[in-house]
Image (cartoon, rainbow, N blue to C red):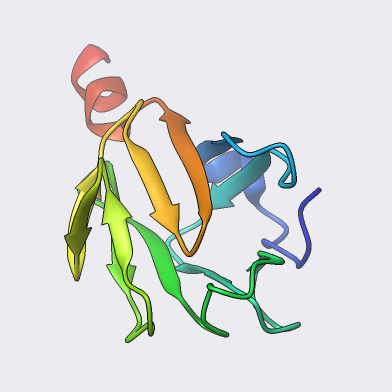
Length: 118
């Protein structure tokens, strides 16, 4: 279940699926349209995560040069990619993103590959 609006031109942006590794959470489908998507516990987060260890505005996902980048937003308990705490990092396809006690695997096709193939 995805909470929040991601914009009208979803077809134009990078399509990302966050596959939940926890039975409590659901998979999330995101469309990045040159804007960041905030993950957090607060009601106005683009992707709301119901986990008390997740900060209100925990981290953001943004497309940079055709790749997905995660940025910690000063969270209390940190943002982790493949078990390593990061302040900012590329999130490659099949990387594990953990915030609080919640983990996802990122699934997407980098835009840079699509551009080179044309």
